[in-house]
Length: 551
Image 1 (spheres, helix red, strand yellow):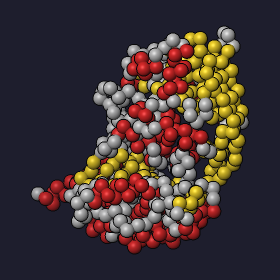
Image 2 (image 1 turned 180 degrees about the vertical axis):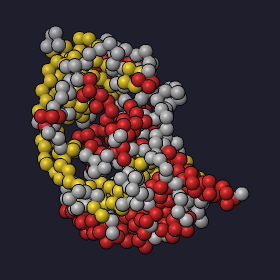
Image 3 (image 1 turned 90 degrees about the horizontal axis):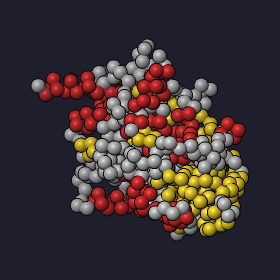
Image 4 (image 1 turned 30 degrees about the vertical axis):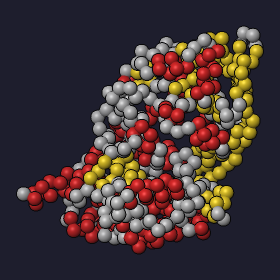
């Protein structure tokens, strides 16, 4: 009976060759192999691997060398393994925002940059000059037909600045995933919707509960240099000239001028019957000047071709970002952000997985594509560029496993999948984990919207069923309190010069997880059908569209 169950499970996961072959290939993913890659990529020699720097150059060269050495071929038509993409760095140099009485042509209040607001040109312009713009409050700024929700009903926002509540509705478990933050709740969606609707500008009201972080995170992050995938400036010029954030207090000033109560307005947004509200007798004047610089970055793409005549043109995509934060202000004499956990470890997992797939290449029906992306730390831009300029049509990609931050603290009996239950690839993780006696858990903090904060999200946006594995916390043979301790260490080291290999590291955890994901990937490569999003998922419609395009 046990043997029959195992055969059924293997068939369900797509593992059709002998189990010993898969196991033997997985054993090629080793501690020494992973540590060698991590030690190299996170060494001071690689200068923190910042976008557009010598550290990026060294990283790209190393990755190409490794792929060539293992026998993986180029995933780029010119044979270089490198997909180049242009970036634009944007920095706000001067700025002003005034609340106005348009009819009297008088200023009511002047907001202070950084303290009250941050703003920037949204269309790669060098200057924004908006005078006495009309304001419309559009609640969450969401249009979601599947939820019977439209915050723009009955209003034309062309030529107006829209004021937006952050997040998405959380009050009902049957709407927008309840407390799980969907893409509708991300600031990127709101700015994209503003452009789609032809708004002159878009301003999000910050509150700590709706953002999940304080105003300091917003003001510090958005007042620094921002990066974008460079586009044709004429093509990118839409009606939307500026985007920004304001504090709760600044938002209160705007509503008060219009005779409205901010708390009542924020509460009103939680109803599907909400209708946009014009802020009468209130205008906003905004002046911004920005400087730009050109930067070039690169993705490294390698391929292991499958053998099925009908399926080898379909792919499993493995992603990891190789970039990190580079050189910053010294702390105790150390200025190199080595990025060992984030994300030399993830890159190492991809390299070791590709080596294992190469060893079992004759058993692969579909092909494997490693897309090791740059510019993740400045906005997921490498994966965005690949998704917008794919080397393989998204409809021919069965799924994406994104490895961003591995478990470097020891073996666990569990693991977390960001995207748990959303697609059939996530289901495969559960199946393989159960076979190994391990538990798979969903995201413990879905309100943080982590699904939209790593490179798999850009894959999902073009319909590819994607998963983002995270480490578990049920450690094996570790002392009591160990999970809490290493969680604290990891959090303290995150995005700092202290993200280095340290005394707590035990790479056995990353090896165990990588072997599991290798088997999951093998199943997807040999499954009878492509992976899919679950019915009703926010990315299902895009997936169906992509599949239709390749018919």
